[in-house]
Every structure is written in C-alpha cells, then in structure tokens.
Image (tube, rainbow, N blue to C red; front, side, top):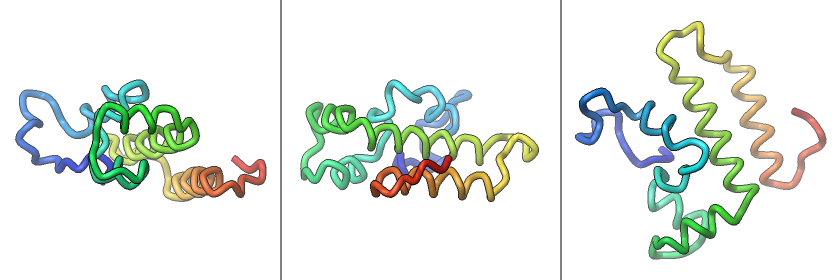
Amino acid sequence: MFTGKRPTNDMFKEGLSLYSFVEAALPERVTEILDDSLLREIVGDETITFDTKQAVLNSKMVLEALISVLEIALGCSAELPQQRPDMKCVAAKLSSIRNKLLGTHLGQE
C-alpha cells in the first residue's frame, strides 16, 4: 500500500523482494520508495517532483510516522512466524503513531 508495488512486480527478481526493497530504503531513503499518489496526498500537490519529496523529508513528524509504519510492516512480514510481533503490540504501535500525528499523544508508548 505504501510503495504501490505488488510482491509480484517485475522489478522483484534475482533475490530482490518487496521486503528487501523496503528494508534497504529505511530510514534514509523512505521517500524514494513511497507511491506517488501517497506523496501527493501527504503534500497536497498534483505533481511529484524532487521538491515534493523534500517537503515530506522536512515534515519530521510525517516522515517519522512513515518510517515507523514501514518498520512495523517489515516486522509483520518476517519470514518466520515466531519473528513477527503479536497483533496486540502492532495495534498499540499503530495507535501511538496515529495519536502523535493527530496531536493527541498522552505520553503513552
């Protein structure tokens, strides 16, 4: 959903997977892997340019939220089930991210 890519995309060959694509980009290159429509939604701009990606980078709170959500996604898609977080932990983390973005963070983590 965040990258706009399917695991079956033609770019995922020769050892590259959606998982490794996202993992390699985090955290420094997160805007490079985001779907253009998501960037437009965040920035409120119709055209995606270098400046659009810079605007996301300059919005520290949004950038941190995107990185956190993608890190949770990586954890949830770990190859071995025992390496994946339980859903109660995932829900708590996502709720914390939402609260921070909405400005209702009450010191709960």
